[in-house]
Length: 128
Length: 141
Image 1 (cartoon, each protein chain N blue to C red):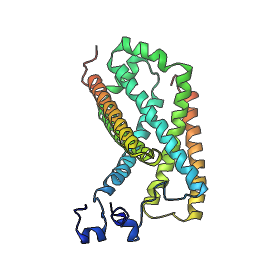
Image 2: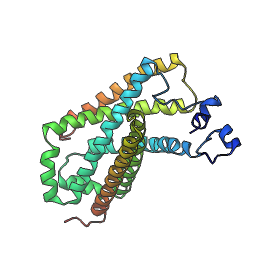
Image 3: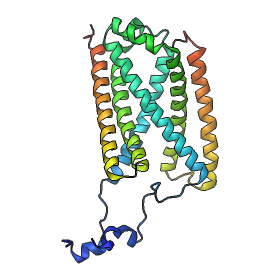
């Protein structure tokens, strides 16, 4: 037996109110990634070589580490939201859908954490 | 359960989100949407590669040397080319989405035309980046 009031039944479920939040985050991160992604691709292509000494020296630059940190975090966030939308569209069954979204989120969080620690280790000089 | 409860939004004629299950897309928007998503998935794989590379740098010179043999392999060079192409397409197609979000260019005719512009812009950008990758500098990555 339903506990819903007659008025509630007539009005329907209504909005969950936070639906636009992820949509907006996707846009904000995409704008940030125009700059961060463009910088990263150009910087990587502009490096004279990609041996350890060159890459490590580049990563110790004043602005490189903060930009790399932002790139790792913002791209992981953007990617997680995008993969989530794709899962929502193509995985029909609710249980599988929730499982796939949870798995994708975990993978992205782990990627972000590992990437951030790696950048910090190089920037702070705690590399073996 | 009462059927009216679950179909509340539909029964009131509220606009529903254009999810794939209820919205039939035109051929052009479908193609450009799918390729933008495919490019996004490729870039997500690129992100795994990025983190692998960062960890290799953080591991020191010897660890980087081991990773570098993999990173400089032919298969990975193909991967960099694919990643650059995906980056170019996702960037330009993403700009189109940001324009759409302002409410411009949404008509069928406009979106068909902008799909062509996106493709042209992405191909040009991808070619420029690939030329930089393979012809400019050392060509190592």
